[in-house]
Structure formats: structure tokens, C-alpha cells
Length: 349
Ligand code: PMV
Image (cartoon, rainbow, N blue to C red; front, top):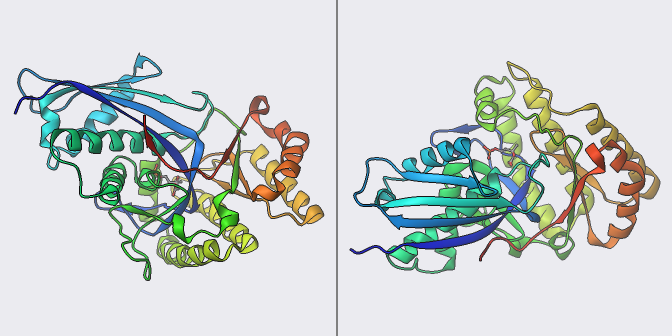
């Protein structure tokens, strides 16, 4: 068939795990189920330009431009990802691909962008499939396919293609859940969580994080791994119940324990990683004091790095904002933070 050039463009958000994915097996399959909120402000815009190639090559012809500049590291990673997709997307050989990608948040902010970046690219790829062949049966099938492709690029990215919240991993009692793709759970959320805030406090912008590939790999030898996987599966079920009931207190207990457990797993691996910094602990203890004094449900979580995510209901946003400015920004690099909240998910631009 005659193929014509074109371009497709998606914006896709990052997500923050409430129950953490840490440990994988096989081809990017999780050792345990995980749950996340979809964010809004932390997002990636990606344009996929495709031009027919004179003759199809053996591999994939791709160049990735980040903020307008050719990025050799991301190009290599993207080529490996796309070549891994050739068994299901052999048509990728027929094109020269140029990917233009930018993040909505500052480039050097130390905010991980693999979830937003990989999901934005995956959404472009499913749109390309539809442009070349025929539409997928419905939007549910479209986003499921995008989630599946995202997972192959970066595990946690599969949770970014749905608005509000998502679960990845087989969970008993949750219809359609799978290890191969995430499912959206917007319908399961109590209203208090639909407008939840996530202020990302940038304790350090030079995110010194263990590569997640290495991190997941270390779990294979971690003596606590079997207990951890069982705990995370159990907590995923409980978190789903908490999200339905709108129980912000129990939500916070699970949230904080998940963050500290993730870091405890990294600290107890061989080699060991300590990714929190002194100011991470300052933020945490200052927050605990604020909670004791006010009784407000403001809780923290962490990714695989030193930055702190503060999560709280919209009803107390004004008060928390004053607390953050007066007592927490002092511990952030250049007083930087990103005020984010639960978002509606990706959209085509
Ligand atoms: O998606 P990966 O392979 O980069 O793993 C990320 C894992 C955490 O962000 C630490 C937790 C999670 O579930 O998002």
C-alpha cells in the first residue's frame, strides 16, 4: 500500500504510585500489583512524524529530539523500544520516524519523565496503527493497547494512559485487571480523591536515582522480596477499598508506609542505595508536626529519589499552601516545587 507522511501528537501525564511497583520478571511484568493517581501538570508532549522510507530496513529508523535538540541517549533507548515492538508492529520498518518531545515542567527539575514520555509515545503509536490500518473497536481498546505498549517501554508508564487513577497487575475481584496492561479506576474513586492535590517538593533537582532497571533487578536477590510482593498485593486491594470509601486517614497510612518501604527495599539491597537526603527527612518530620498540630490529612509519598510528594484534599489547599511556603520550601532546591493534582489523563493535540 501507498504510505503518505504525517504526524501525530499526544500530551500524556506522569503518575504517582500510591502502592509501589518495585520488582519485575519476564518481559516487563510486575512482581506485584500497583495503584496510582494520574497527575496533570507533570506531562510530556510528543509528536511522532513519519515519512515513508525508500526501502524498509532491518531495524527502526528513528531520531528523538528533546526540547528541539537531537538526544542520542533517548534516541538509542527509543530505538530499542521500537525494535522490541517489531513482532507486533512490523510496519515501523517502513518509515523514517522523528519524535519531538518536550516536558511541561522544567527540564532540570528532577522530576522523572519516563511515565509521561513513554505513554505519550505509545499513544502516538496506537494512533499511527489506526491511521494506517483501521480504528480499534472502541476507545477502551485504544487505551488498553496504549497501556500495553507503554508497559513495554517503562513499566509504570502503563498507568499514565487513564484519567484519575489506575491499577496495574492482576487483582482478585477487579474485573479486567492484568499484568500486561493497566486499567482505569476513575469510577471507583470517592469524590474527595478526584480532586486530590500532589505538591512535588523538589528537595534536589539533580535527581540521584538508581536506574529503575537496576533497582528492579536488585529485588531478585533481596531477602524481603517475597514478603514485599505479598504485602503490595494485599495493600492494592485495601487501597482500592480506601479509595472507594474516601478514607483519607487510612489512605495516608498506606501511602507513607509504601514510600518508606520502597526506600527500605533499596537500602536493604546489595549494593545498597540511599536516595533520600537530609532535607527529605526534614520535610517529613516538619509535615508530621503540622499534622499533629492541625489534624489535617496531609501525607507524603516518594518515588525512587529524594523529592517529596505532599498529598491532601482540595478542602484544605489554602492552608497547606501557606504551610508549604512558610515551612517546607526552605528545604527545596531554589525553593522549587510543582503544584500538581489528580488529572484527566492524556489527550490528542
Ligand atoms: O517504571 P519504572 O521501571 O521506571 O519503575 C518505577 C517504579 C517506581 O516509580 C519507583 C514506583 C512506581 O510504581 O511508579
